[in-house]
Image (tube, rainbow, N blue to C red):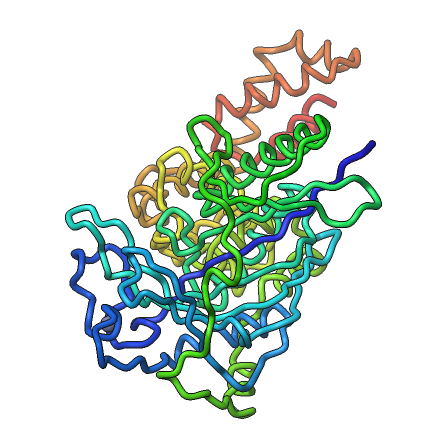
Length: 465
Ligand SMILES: [Zn+2]
């Protein structure tokens, strides 16, 4: 009997707002512990929350970018539970009426339905120098909940990459999974084909895409082996241990009634005007899936090149700026997908923070595309630009790296090479293609690589025949 897996995600996304969700404390990462706090986010008696308009705008933007319907009446609720990182004893969230509903994201071969996206506030976290750091308490979050439409880890990773692209290009979040600005909970169940959904377990807060894949693979196998042995699945919350690549029991799953949800009485309902939504609609950036279509159909780029130039905003900006003045878009994409990523990986650069001198790169590309420099020089000088911020034109002049255009000089060099390699000429004429390549190599060597290989080929053929 075949088993089927169903996976749904709950993705928590920290919003890129300057201020917290219900007070004007700074919502930044990595500040000195417990410095961004006030009576509101510490939950002191009498302090009243005031919703952050920018956070609501970003929630609507995310809903529009993921094909959701937007609820124009915003109501907040309280989720009550006691934990030391939650100073008020409840979290303000949207339980009864999420701001965005019924959206979707299209994967390459499948549609993943988004049940809802709602706004909530983050909790504090265990501090390094104090028991709890409340800087994070009250930071605005979106929680995006999908239907259990995924069947395997690959679909989940594809979805998360697309979601990350959308959120980054819309300036909603930086989606740094390592810094916790994107956190993923996985709900997974297994069933026999033709049966309804099985009992699910939840894996909390998995810390990287690689771990998400491993956690799903492990948990799927665990469910199947339990079912095969005739055991029941216990509905529970588990965590993923990256060291042993296994999920482990954390606690029995809370039910909705454990949280005693009720309306947040300190915040009146907010009516969102059509104009406000329209102004967000009119200022939406070109979304990554639209860019994907253009790159594929208009520029004829392959998947690898497209993924590379959509990996983050500044790489995409580099590409988009370069192609304004360079027609050969394939060569620009290639430079980024192959040469740039090689340098970035070898030197452990943080690509998202990297500052490119786009002018330098453009000047170099132009020289290469009009055959003024060889491919090797192009690669080497590109490395110098990225690592040492070298200005390419004066560097090429200083090191005399331009290809030679003196045809008489090239031809006399080639004649000399032919004179010294008569055996290769005979071999080539007898049908050995390799000998021709050898002759090209010898000419390149004599010309110190400073000649266009096509010119060498033409002159070789002319003189051999
Ligand atoms: Zn505050």
